[in-house]
Image (cartoon, rainbow, N blue to C red; front, side, top):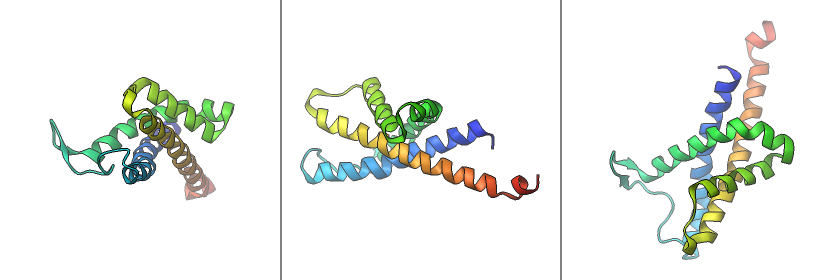
Length: 141
């Protein structure tokens, strides 16, 4: 896999996982505090194709992860990994917009998504680099 395709793939996976793990955990806390009406994970099918809600949101979060993978080198170089993730989360919030009655929830979801995305993507990049360096082709070739 080329470097850019690896970054894009890892970005997609990091975005999807950030949604399921980080936003899911925060959503559970929000639900426990009666800030949202339902638990964040749902298999309820969404029209028009009947894709489960959580899978649908993870897919879109994965696309945001691809966008992050493209801008991450500049963000991380300028402000660091976590701050870059926070900035990206805020940028996603600004693009998607928010509803006035749920500002705290929306901001929290986007900030935690950015943090999770940065952490997962950074760890995935480190693993990919380590595996590439340790591959037989890299050692012998």
